[in-house]
Length: 91
Image (cartoon, rainbow, N blue to C red; front, side, top):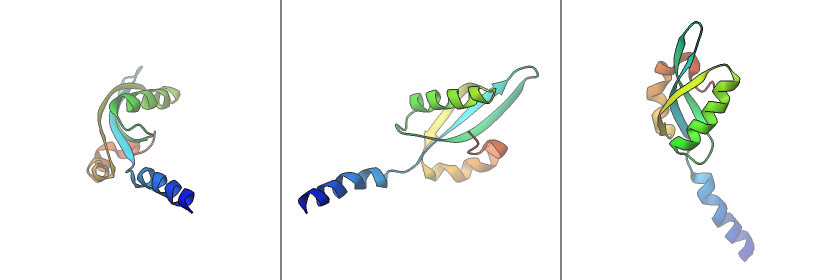
């Protein structure tokens, strides 16, 4: 019983963590196209991790990451939805 309680106690903080998102700017050349987007990021929730994850995702689709604007939790999604348009949670 102690083992079960300890296991549950260790799992609760991980389950309680909020999702992580990053907003970013990317480009595609010839012809030049720019976009602003929002993407969900896996842990750890920091700018360096967001850059690594987004660079791979965007490169695979022919886009080049210019910069990560910010990293945020669920609370910042609503205010960025319209600005990101088609690139809201696309990558």
